[in-house]
Length: 270
Image (tube, rainbow, N blue to C red; front, side, top):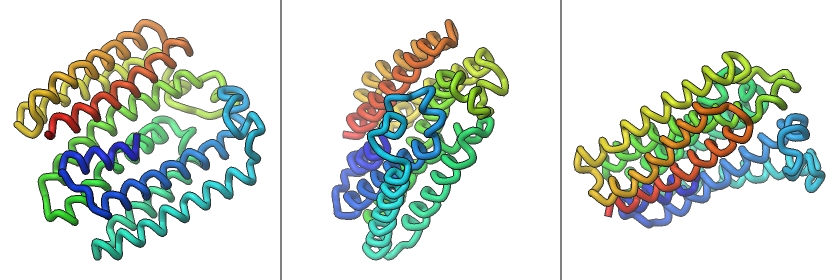
């Protein structure tokens, strides 16, 4: 999804130079490393919630997982240096280093913090769009693409945060056993479902704005309707029941809806 964020901004701006490729690779390696280090710290929790994952299933050792994450982070930093040299701008490298620190702290400490962990994941997802907008905007001298990327970042931030809360609701049993105080544990499943519904509704309301402002064409709106229907069904689904099964279905609906939204953004810019 993070890689798609950069590709999407490139399609919208009709820019396909070397910096776009570097941006795609850096985001890919940063997020990949973040996922690995997250699984490293989640070993005990995944023994309960996700025993089929590589580390708890024994496919990869904890030591090798940690080393793998360090290698991926290092590759991302090297690519960030290349971007800095190409654009003569150090801000993309700063964003990469900042993201690495935040991802590590999230996995090590903040994931179990009430709501903070959800916000961090949502923020980092949105940051992928901002990162792409800065790289492409700098290389093409286009301020408009930066503004568009900010809207995409806001959309992704809100929906990702909703999905992260939903995933915490799904994993509440394992989190309780590990003593992790997530939002659903702190305020309960029902109140958490209300917050998820609220965030989904906000994004559904925001979605048509870029069409109304003339930024995207009518094809964007037509495709976006499909995503809105999926988001709405997800909201109704989690309101109906907060069971592990229903939360799992809602999480998948939000993920599919976001992917369709990205398609709408891309086609809507043609």
